Amino acid sequence: MQQVEQQLSFGQRCGRAIKHWRSTPATARQAFPQTTLQAIEAAISDGEQIHHAEVRFIVEAGLTPAMAYQGVSNRQRARELFAQYGIWDTEDNVGVLIYINLAEHQVDIVADRNVGRRITPEQWQAVCRTMTAGFCTGNFHDSTLQALHQLNGLLQNHFPASGAARNQLPNDPILL
Image (cartoon, rainbow, N blue to C red; front, side, top):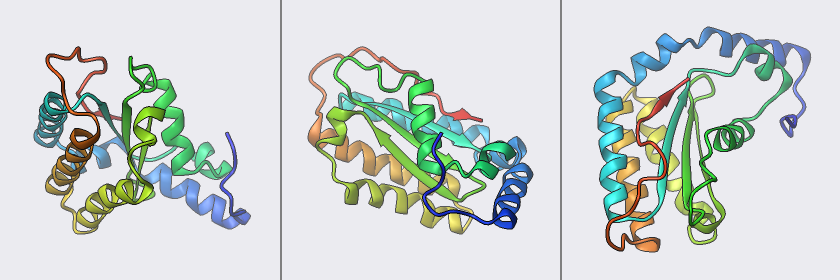
């Protein structure tokens, strides 16, 4: 993995590692309880009825302390998970990953090449801002569902459903 572009001092790297170490799976379960996870899964399933893309949603409480210390960025981790979970492996290259790192308070979206060609960085940022604005107030449930609604609208505009489609990726969110 590559290093974060800005070089962190020893103290900053240690502080970042501790912040990630303190963010536990319980933190993720508190922010995303079972009812929220079920609502996310339903929103993804509903969206895939109106568009042809495949959406995965992954929440990670924090990186391992070693990854945080080494300077792995949120974007690098999102790309790693995109590959690890085979989101790139859809028939028409229409996989989309929404990755949330709770320790960093960051959201990243990684899209396969067919989707990435059609949706602008500004549109992706708008979806991310919807989530992070809600997260700042502790509103993980509603802001996530609003962002998924936005995302489904974007995907429907560019990849409208054309009859029955095979679900190529699971719709259930993943908590790491």
